[in-house]
Length: 245
Image (tube, rainbow, N blue to C red; front, side, top):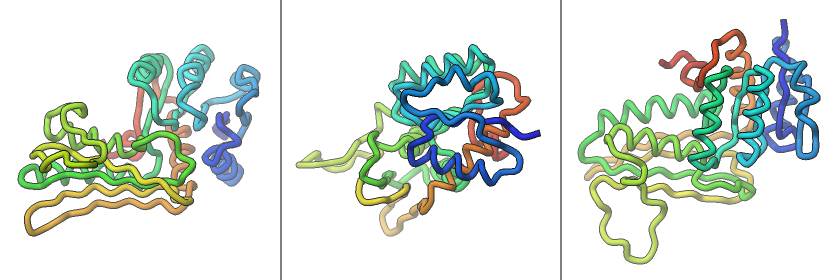
């Protein structure tokens, strides 16, 4: 039986990619394509799962409506305020939900090896994150960069607020021992590049993922929606989908 999916943000770059790939997937189908001005309530009853790649400003409302209809939810938007994210995740205790900063299999592998590398290179290595996206991207740093930062801080046992340094200018002084620099570049049609740098005296390790097509994210989101079918309520992530836990 095919997984019936509603796509929110259907006219955006990611929405278009998801709908195109769903048209090629023998295990899933689009039963609703929702964008600004469309009525989500009309299509929710006929679906198994919702994939939302619209905008973080509507995530809470989408989560409320899917919860009321007991539908699985995949959220791909980023840039949420902390309070909004917490409220959305609370609703995820009532339905199966995946709230992930990135749905690429490769990027989630990057998350995994970044943690392992940070554990190995815990002493004597400065850590920096550099990301680049197309000039249309609105939030900064990217959700993926924010997740990488969170991983590095977690390994250090410190909070993001304690360690993050977003860009540098003027004369900020010498780099402190534990700070983690985060640098966002914007330009052209770059789909998404992320690099985690571990730099010590005499050597440097760089972990890099470069996306050349949105299909990698769209395919991962579809995979996530199918994974949620039959799962009990709760918040899952791509590590669950990929069996990395």
